[in-house]
Amino acid sequence: MTEPILPVDLHLASDLDEPGVLEPSALYPRLPDGEVPDAAVICFFPETVRAIGAREGSELAFRFTSIIGGQPCYVREVAGRRVAFFFPEIGAPRAVMFLEEAIARGITRFVAVGSAGVLLPDLVMGHPVVVTSALRDEGTSAHYGAVGPVVEAGASGIRACIDALDAAGAPHETGRTWTTDGIYRETRSTVARRIEAGCAVVEMEASAFLAVAAHRGVELGQILFSADSLAGETWDHRGWVTAGDAHEQVFWIAMDAAARLAAG
Image 1 (spheres, helix red, strand yellow):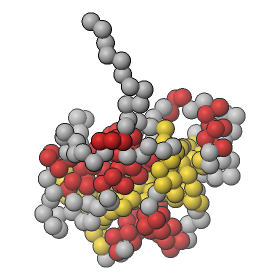
Image 2 (cartoon, helix red, strand yellow):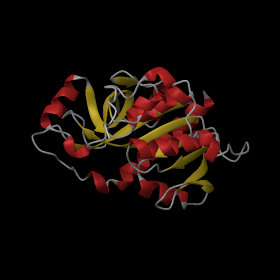
Image 3 (tube, helix red, strand yellow):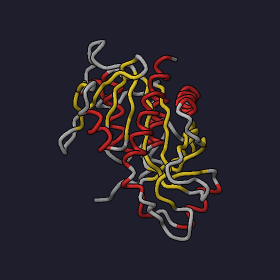
């Protein structure tokens, strides 16, 4: 049997106004008002989410569905506002499924916080970077309307993150991230091209998050925590997997940013 010839570009923007065959709202009905807050922190530090979720003052709002057991979504009060927080697992496709489910449940403002590989040598370990744009090198964002090479972050999300970092007295940078699906294919040549394109850090979800936020009409900001380094001749892990105290510090800054985003 002769196979059909496929078009060169499988990610055309002509169907972006059509609903998906399976919309998140069909699986995850909106929760009654008051069961989940307007704002949430998407935290890529699972040990931090578990630890704070177990503390007095946190409550379980619901559980995300997952083939490996699901993840809890907790809620606690920050700066007089209830803010949700959860771990979205790893990688753009999976993390976007969590984001889509959270939106369907009724959350409309998000601050994501996680670690990122460093591309520039002057970004020291633990230095926060507020994402202003993301270079698309993953596949998920194309299904949400991002047809250019870069997705821009929304002004409200950027401002909430900067204000929270300033309030905490935390020195920080703003800049572009490189979002990739292929962490083991970050070649030296590709790294050089991404630096030329203005990228300061590299991670796996930001451009997809920003594309979903624009498509669904929600607000989203992101703070990336400088971790391992690709800036030198060889990869340097810099001990980033053991930086638990720093993870919690950045988590609380993100919670403050989410509360600020909700306050408008």
